[in-house]
Length: 306
Image (tube, rainbow, N blue to C red):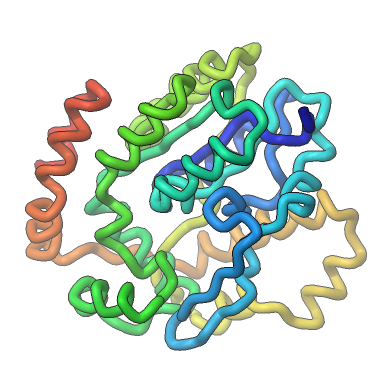
């Protein structure tokens, strides 16, 4: 068996804490988390992917690692670690393809660890919308975007524009639990209120010696840019960034990029509130799924409906 295959997959919902889990676990001496987050291999193995992003056709997504040799190279540095992991939120949303491919391609699918992070789907939808606003990839109001979601899906827009559809967790979670015995579910709300307890549970689940892990709440922030050109500079390739990057070792470059990006987001983003009527509308849409999920995972999720 190729020991480079990861044995941990963080498959949480987008905007539900996967970034915090990924970089917190990477601090543990027995863990190696892929330097590239969101490789998405097990949704599109050996496939090409193209979609529309804000009206532009994307044929080579930067996040995607879709060939097995390239994917396994992501874990070569961690071959001697107890846990080798990656985080791809696409795995939860495209659960049927992911599960089928994991069972087909992974040499030991019965013993992989699955960590699922979930968040109130109403808040998650709005946070995802603000994420697209942050990146200059969403020009509609939230309400307009919700009304246009079905049209965008039919016209092959990026799956991140499916603000509502990505929040129906029940079937997604059930499928992973039915197929992988080592599955653990965490709530974003617990991560925010009881960080130390959550990270202790996470390490215990993975059979690790419990260490102090720190969560950076400012990673992957969402919000409306105060100065849009600053965020555009951060996201797009340019000669200055490339020149500075080449001066630093690869790992230091990655950490420096995250720190700079987080610092800029902290001061250049401002939070917006969802319209109360829209919140009521979304609660009605999600209520049945939330109640089914609540029974499935044995957690009181009534707070999501208040």
